[in-house]
Length: 42
Length: 327
Image (cartoon, rainbow over all chains, first blue to last red; front, side, top):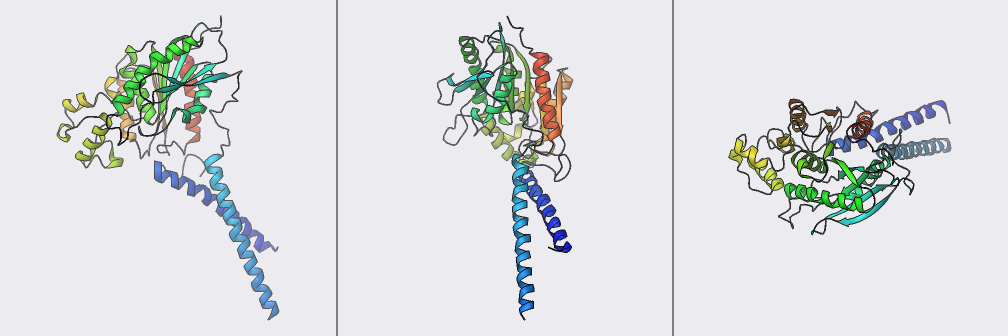
C-alpha cells in the first residue's frame, strides 16, 4: 500500500465516522427536533 | 495489455476496499452514536437482592391496565420510607411501566420505594380514555401503592412524582392538582418534556396556532370533552382545560419542581414550558429548569444537561424527601 492510498483510506474512515454520527443525529432531529451542531460532539 | 489489466484490477480492488471500509465505519459509528454512552449510563444499577426486589403487576383498579410494579429497597430497617412514583411516557397512547425499569431500579437503589404505574392508554377503541381519566387513575393508585408498600414492610411517609413526556404531564398534574388529596404529602416533582398547558399559540409544531379547529380537536381529544374554538383566550377555556392543565393548579404551596425541556422540541412545545417556569417563579415555588439548548423531545443532543438532570433528581430527593435514619 503506497502513501497515497493510506491517506485516502484514513480520509475515508474519518468521513464515514462523521457521517455515521451525523446521520443518526439528523434522523433523531427530524423526528424529535434538535440542531445538527452544538451540544454533544456531533 | 497485461500491465493495463493489472492496473485496472488493482484500482477496482482498492475501490472495493474504500467502499467496504466506508460502509463498515459508517454503520459502526451510527450504532455507537445510538447505543454507546462514553460516560456510562447515568441510571444504570448493578441490580441484585442486596439492592432491592421488584413486586410486579399489583392491581389498583378495575381496568386491565391498572397495575403497578413496586421496587422495594433491600434495607427494611427504616421506620418509614419515601415513595417515588415514576410515570411512563408514550404520547398517552403507548408505553408501559416496564419501559422505566432502569430508572425505577436506580431510584430504589437510592433508598426509596419506587413504583412504576400503568394507566389505561387512549385509543380509537377506547373513546372514554383521555388525559383526565389517566390522571384520575394515577391519583387513585397512590392509596393502593402506599397500602402495598406497608404490607411489604416499607411504610410510606411522603412521596414524590416523576415522569417523562406524557408521564411528565401526568406527574405535574397529580402533584399540583391532587397533591393535597393524596394519603401522603407530595414533597417534590421531577419531570422531562411533559406538557403542562394547552394554548394554541404555543403548539405551533402541529399548526395549532394557525388552525383553531385543529387545536380544539386535539386538546378536546386529550381532555375528553368538546372544545369550542371560539373560547380560546377566554376564562371559559381556562376553566374547561384546567382539568388537564397542570399550570392552572400552581400556587405557593405547590411542591418543588425540577423540569427538563428541549428548546427544539417538536412533540411538546418549548414555549409551553416557559409558561410553567414563569408560573413557578411567580408563585415562589422552588424549582430548577434544565434547558437542553440543542435538543428536541428526546433531550438527545446535550448529554451534559442530562447528567445535570440526574444529579438534580438526587439533590431534590435528598433535600425535600430525605431518607429516614435507620432504626
